Structure formats: structure tokens, C-alpha cells
Length: 432
Image 1 (cartoon, helix red, strand yellow):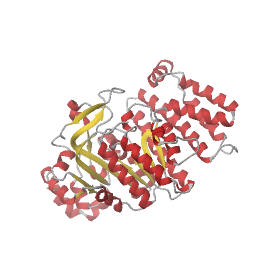
Image 2: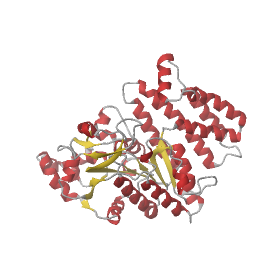
Image 3: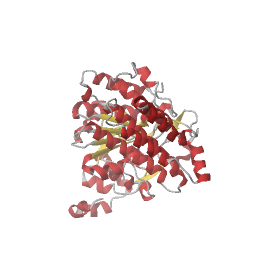
């Protein structure tokens, strides 16, 4: 809570101090805006002003409603508010190919099915599903009647699948300067000789050597070709950012050797770097939408993650752009089913989402009696009453319903988000 609130709402703070947790559902019910259809939900965008970035979260990666609701909000922001791109928690390489389809670029996939086939990395259900397919097709159709420079784009902000990214970078360099391409391939071999990131980390442990300088060397090679007559603007941007993905992936993997938040923070910093560079790529007045998990888009400083030294794109974007230029929307559910795996790279399962713990934010939101609603954290009375640490559910691509308490993050809700969408009962994605 900032100092301004203390100065102007001292009487309210006294009232809030005697507001017990049992009173919160009644207060939440009073401020809730129920919705029954997409038009009622997209009214939420009327509260978005001149923000450069709108961050949209999800409490789990395998829930259909989080995708369809974010898609509806995103379409509205693109059509009615002039937003330029959607950047998602996915790989740069595969989404670059999908982006060619979305923006009608030469040499890209010719059909939506071909575009979706570019997604090949586990967990496939996270992006290779009917919900994303429908959004990608809509973006392709929306762009059809627009000039090339006005078309909206679809991008990935993650550091994974870095080996494919390195192949793309080498292909671009070699297409312009074969000799430089061979030098880049030699530099990348420091990393590509390992089949798995874990093998690379073990090498560092044993030898105390790493490939960081080799990754940086290739970036310099890419940048040396920026003004080459065969280097078009998008091709250069894609290759330069691919080289940055390779650098930050190496840092992310190497960070696992530290017993702190280093690895997480390297990945989170790349998330924001990608959004920042996309804003610069479009124009000075560009606006972007980011889809990622709540743990990424909700300000880490309002969670126990922040107290443990972790940051995220929610925090970094507010710090860099100013809080007034970022609008973060969290999403949550009380119960239902979700697609996830019991372990990393395990089989996809449809799992039960247990009813939320009694002392959680989700339980309090469910107690309002509304099946679907959103909250806006713009009123001092509401924000001050909710200014307390309470568990908030977070389900990843791996999930064990029997370990329910381990799936919660202590959170101050109105400090973490600018708005929150609650859907009591949710279902699974429709994988392709």
C-alpha cells in the first residue's frame, strides 16, 4: 500500500482494522461485477485507459475458460483499443512461425492446421489446443484487410526450445554471410553438443566453465549484419531476439546451480525483455497484451515469492513503465477439472481441481455466491480491506491434487493485480 492511501484514508483504515476475514465475502459481493456472457465480461476493458501493457494471467495452464476469456478480452482490446500484439508464455521459435501465418508473411504456414503443427514441445496441450487455434485463426482473418505495418502479431516470451532458436539464428546468419554462419555454428557448438540442459549444468559443475561468452559472440555476429542489404527489418529482429533467447536460456539453466531465485529471475527478466522489445519494434505508441500464469503477471512484490527474492514480469513492467501504464488481470477458480501431468514431461491427465482451501482467496470469492464475476481494485475501501496476506491458488503444468496446500502462494490480492476474474467451476482445454 502506498503512502498516499495512508494520508487520505486514515478514517477508513480504522474501520478496516476491525474488518474480520469473515466479513470479506460480503464486501467482495458488494464490489463484484457478475457476467454471464462475453459482452458483459469485455466491459472490463472500459476500465483500461492508456496502459501500454495489459497482462492477463491464469491460475492453471490447462483450463479452457482462462483461454476463452482472455481471448475475448484480447480481441476487444485489439478491435476497440488499438492493441498491436499478443505475447504468450510460449517458445519464440514456434510462435515466430505462427506469427508468419497470423501476419500473412511470405514463406509461412498456409493454413491454420499447418500453423498449429509448429508447436512440438511438451506440454503440447498448453498451446496446441482448440482454444488457441480459434484465436490464431481470428488474428489471421482480422489482419487480412489491413496493411502489413498495421497487422497485429503473435509472439512467444519464453526461453525454452533454445536449440531450435539457435538453428533459426544460424539459418539467418548463413543466408546472408555463409562464412559468418560457420563461425556462429562453431560458437553455438559449445551448447549444442549437449542433448539436454541438465547435461550442460552438470558440465559446469564439473569443469567450472560455461558457454556464456559463446552465446554473446553469436549475438554480436547477428548485430553486425543489421544494415546488410539482405537483412529485412523483421528477419533481423527475429534473429537478434532469437540470439537473446539463447543467451537468457543459458543463464536460466546455469542459474539452477544457485540456491536462490536466480534461475527463475533470469527467465522472468526475459519475459519482460521480450514485451519491451516488441513495444519498441512496433512504434512509440504501441500497446501489447501478455498471457502468462498468475505467478508471472501478478506483481511478485505482493506475494511470498517477492519476499524470497523472486521477481516477475508483473513487477518488472510496473517498475519500468510505471504502474499507471500496466494493467494486470488475474484469473482464478474454485473447483472443476484441469489438464496437467503428475511430473515433468509426464503424460497429460484430466485431473480434479479440489474445492479451494477454506482460508484461501478462492474460498472467499466463492462465498460471494456469484458463479462468474470480476473485481476492480480501484476503490480505496475495497483495497484497504483486502490488504492482507491470504493463500492464493497456483496450478502449473505439473499438479498433484493430493498436495493441495502446496499449490498456494501467500498474496495481497489488490496489490498483485488491477482486476481479478473469478469463475467458480472450470473445465479442461481441448487439445488438438
